[in-house]
Length: 212
Image (cartoon, rainbow, N blue to C red; front, side, top):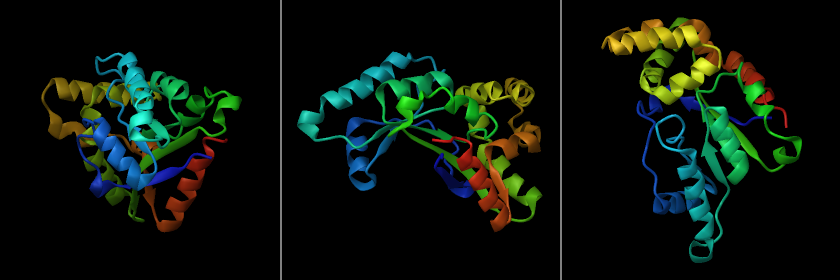
């Protein structure tokens, strides 16, 4: 199954692209037992080779820094997932579409799935008022839809028309229109909303989307 981490909407950084250096990763690994490397190289103009070389340099430094914890690559589209399978110990998505997850996970060979960790951080709002919950998600995802790598992922995942509308608004400088362009169908594919019972059911469905 796919571990799914509810991501409290009010705590999401609107700009998830961050700089990471080796010292940060080393200190983080001491407290968490694992670290992930942000998906800054997927469709942002930088070659995947940079990430490959970075992971290689981390592993090469083990004699000096000590054994590494499991390395997970932040993943959106297939090329980053392929790279994670090549040089990492796991892959972690954020705001992934439930409908698209099975097709991506199917890329992982059966002999590679053992010991290869998969996870997804899901914006989650527990509220029986779906309109109110979705309003929170729209605020949370406003920052993400402005990032080309996320739009490319959601387009590939089957939501091209939504991304077309958002890109038109961005090109026109109409950022205030973004929340209204986020359809319920798209939101419900990459977030979780509802009563406590409904959220539990949705988490179960999401976890089952990636059989191990």
